[in-house]
Length: 410
Image (tube, rainbow, N blue to C red; front, side, top):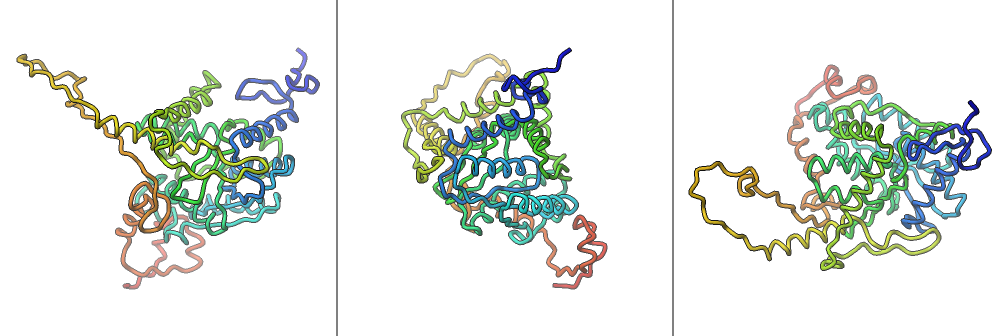
C-alpha cells in the first residue's frame, strides 16, 4: 500500500493525521497550517494593537511554551510590533513548580524574552504546600485557581503591562463549559467562553490565542518543533473536579472528534443570548487603539453580555404575575413538578467592581482571594516558626517541615 500523500501540498509524504478534522498532512504543512490558524484567531478577534506590551502566562508546560513560540514566530512574520514578556507564577509546590520554572528560565533564553516570576509566598504569605497541609487535597485547586488569577494581574501590574495572554486551548474551554453546565453556573459559563475577558473595574485584560487549538495538536506542534517544555502534571490536580470533566470530553472525542469545538461553540452561543431591549444598558470596556494587527473586539467581553441578560431577567421578574390555583380537595401527594416544592434558584446579578481590601477585580465587596486568605489565616497558629535552611530545601510540604521545627512562643 503506497504511503499517504499530504492533502495540503499534494507532494510530501503525510506524517500527521490532524485530530481536529482527520486531515492527512506532512510535518511542514502541519506546522504552517497550525501557525496560520492562530494568526487568523488573533486577527479576526483583534487581540492586539501595534506596540502593545503583552505578558505571556508561562508555566513551562506544553500550552504556554507553544504559545510563547508561536507568538514570537507570528510577531516576527506578520510584524505585530508586540513587546513580549514571560510572566510566571510560583505557587510553591516543591518537586513540581520549582522544576517547571527551570524550563521557563530556559525558554526565556531560547526566545530572547525577559522573565518575571511572582510567588504566592510573597503575595499571600502562603505556599500551596502550606495550603494543602492546612485544608487537605480536597478543594485545594479552588485556592490555587483564585490565587493564580489574581497573581497574574499583580505580576502584570508590577511590569506595567495591561494585557496577559494565557495558553488555554479548546480542550480547556470545553472542560470549563462542561463543568459549569454540570454545576448550573450560567454566569461563569458565559465568561469562560470569551476569547477576551476584561472589565471596567480593572485596567488589565486577558486573551486566549489558542482557544480553538486542540490539545493533541499543540502536543504535535511542540514535538515537531522540538520545543523544550515540562510535561509532569501537578501533584495536587488529580483531586480536581476538572479531571472528571476532562475524562468525559475525551470519551466523547473518541466517538466524535468535533465534540470539543462543538461544546465550545455551544458555550459561545449561550453566552451570546443578549436581549435586544437591554442592549447598551451596561457600559462596555473602552476600545483599545486600532493600529497594526488590530484592537480588541468591539463587542466587549462575555461578562458584559451576561450582565445584560441578568438585568433583563431582573426587569422581567418585576412584571411577572403569580397565578395561584384553588387548593385541591384531594389528598394526592404534591407533584414533583411543583415549583414551590423544589423552589426556584435565583440568579444573582454580578457587577464587577474592586475588592475593598486589596483593590483587585471582584464581583463582591471582598474578593474570593481575600476571603480564602482570611479563612487560612484564622487557623494559622499564633507562634513564630523558625526553620533551618537545610530543612526548608529538603521538605516538600508543611507537614514534612514540622519534624524539623523549632517553635518559640510568639
